[in-house]
Length: 402
Ligand SMILES: *Cc1c(COP(=O)(O)O)cnc(C)c1O
Image (cartoon, rainbow, N blue to C red; front, side, top):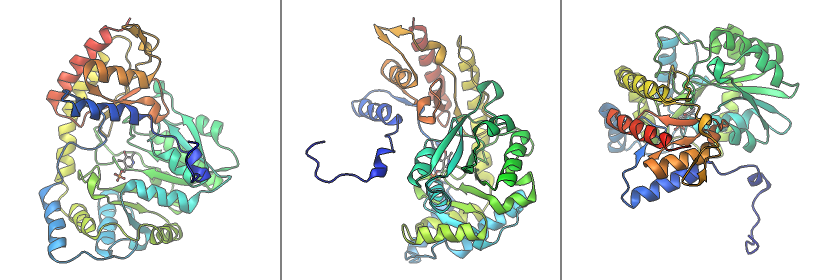
């Protein structure tokens, strides 16, 4: 440290390295050394981008569609996004209420920069997606973690909101279905959010990135359905990363009030300019083309969810909320904290994940990364064979703890 001449910006003191990194780095090193690692830590579908989408990307290159585009994204794509939401959800947006960004995460970053600053508090229901607190911190605002009770299926409530809201609260970030829990907020929870947002003028960010991966029948409650007035203070985040297995293409989009989208466009114009022209053409094929791919993906995840959930619940003292969407299970493994193996004690989720990696060659993500140390996240975007083998290994590893 002492030999470093250039001091880092003050803000770097607020950003901590992700607790997932240690386990990840170790998993990679073990794999490189030839170990048979089962990877349950991945946050992306185990499918390839559909062929017609790839073809659209290739055609964009061949046609020379390789230059800067409009900052908020090509108009065809924004129109297709507007039409997709109108057809699927009955929402009424204009193309100038849409920003296409370099992935959904980047859309969130633009939003936070446009909306939040020093003195503002942002409510983050916890367990949260890893990037929400740092994105709020990088905007100079304060993340306020709202702990969701496992006993209540990680649902929000008016009581919880009232407990954590202050007169500094500027907004709330919702994620339903949730990464890491798979939980979907109930209509009651969203009524509470919507009503408090209307009363107090909060910005509501609804991260709907997993909205095509829902296992329950029937409509998924959405905050926009609480009251039409909420449209003026709600930002919808979505993208093709999860729905079309396009994580590497980096296309996300935000729908929201015109003046906020315009501000986000200012930020984007001074940072990344536009998302990749080629990836935008591919996303256009995804959004405007046939929608059977996300349905096929969801149907393939369902038996995996059933299997992994029943296996986890068959282990003594592990509880697990049924994920109603996304492709993660988030079992509570804290009954095994404090136990030891080979003279080493497991004190929390980071050590539990490290143990599963060393003992059973399975990579998971410690709940601490999501602000919930009692839990460990397993992705079931992995083959049924891997899941079966993984659950056998897990049971053996757990049996050794005493
Ligand atoms: C994957 C994911 C996103 C978006 O990811 P991008 O790859 O940046 O499009 C947003 N929110 C959650 C909760 C996610 O899991």
